[in-house]
Image (cartoon, rainbow, N blue to C red; front, side, top):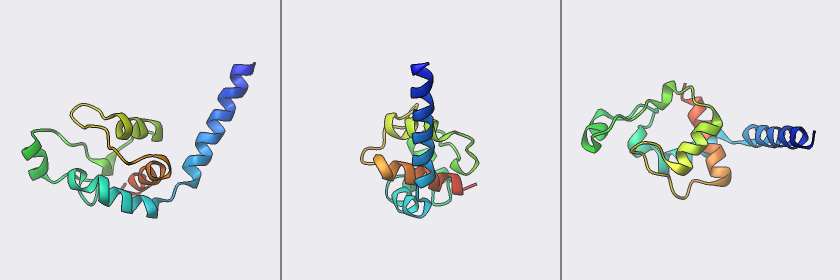
Length: 102
């Protein structure tokens, strides 16, 4: 029972954080920390992917959940390294912005 209550509280708080995220503020974070590889519109420039010898995923078509995006930004995935300096509200805001790219 206690585990269920804690899980519900965690889900509510996570939902509130996402609800409070500011996509407009996230656009500035994206421009500073993500745009150079993922492109201004969420589509990576072919030249960047070729130069880095990687496939850069199209953020414009992402179906990843907030938790998945949060993990990728903070821990990295594949050849993408963790994005240092994008934490807290900036992280929530950039995730909200990425969802607007659809």
